Image 1 (cartoon, rainbow, N blue to C red):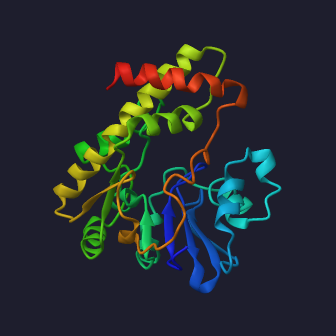
Image 2: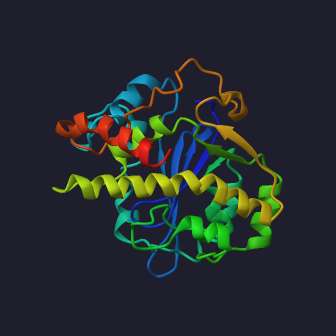
Length: 267
């Protein structure tokens, strides 16, 4: 929206980086294939005159309905990657650091902990890597040039976001934090566990950045001024509510009860 480039280092089929570049009207991907080769793909995208509200509303739709969207950003933000990427990607790459320079060229970087070698889940109930433990105990699962990344991060404005309104946050988690089965008690306990872990994340990140003397500032998702990101717009703060909903519609009536229970158990 601000015309700035964004590198988003994350993935659902393996770790990769998506770069949104309004100035060149491109969408790019960097990943490592199963032969440890660095792969790169670029496609043309038109960032001019984007209908932001229409994009946000379409992103709230379920995947089947979303596929009919006329807004490319709604289609490509989370769900769609090039078939070349999905069919041949290393889940936990150790060569991706060789192109970190491309990511550091971007105005904004999302999930920068990867640049320090940290990768994993903030989901203690999910088998795999605990991101909070990695950050707190300095466990780097990825091979990186640590000195280079630290030096580059010290030159940037680093922002750690946190959430004050836990009830509002819990609603997002119960709507989109996992797949529900036949046992709703299991689902509640899974989501409650994930929320608790997520609530620790900003503290774990502070510990990691303090360890390397990387400066940062804290920013509230509920009360922070968006000017810090160079954004000047009139879209309301919670316009994106419901954009990551997984829970089926017929179960939405249970969410308020789950939230009440969660707040009472974990104030």
